[in-house]
Image 1: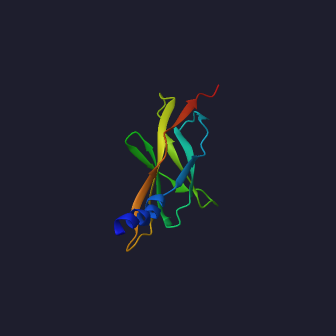
Image 2: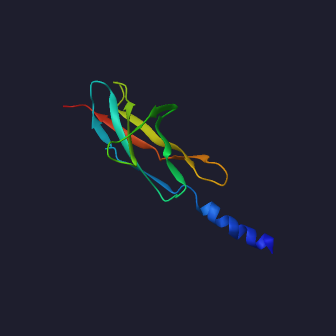
Image 3: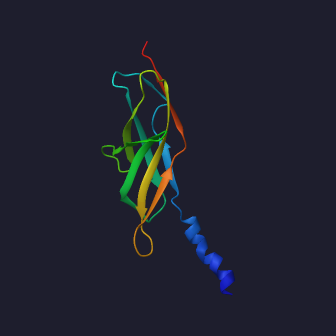
Length: 126
């Protein structure tokens, strides 16, 4: 009997994953600027009630490099950061990575969410 009931008891744990939705708020292209740093912004929505919002550590991933993000003013679920694009490049591919903690039986546990890859095109001001 226990063998039949055990999978049903584990089902809520499987379905209670992060359920995080990362929404890129950055335009697909920006005009080239003199400092070669471009602002990207992301919003996080989650139905995970055990998520510890104060533990969220978002980063921008470009290749193997990680760039920090900071919370946007007056918003609780949005972050922004600067991505460098060298003068000779017109395109950069990036992702967002969110490391966070969630409440679990016993002590908090670590988890992360990774966005799809996005492309930012840099156009010269004519």
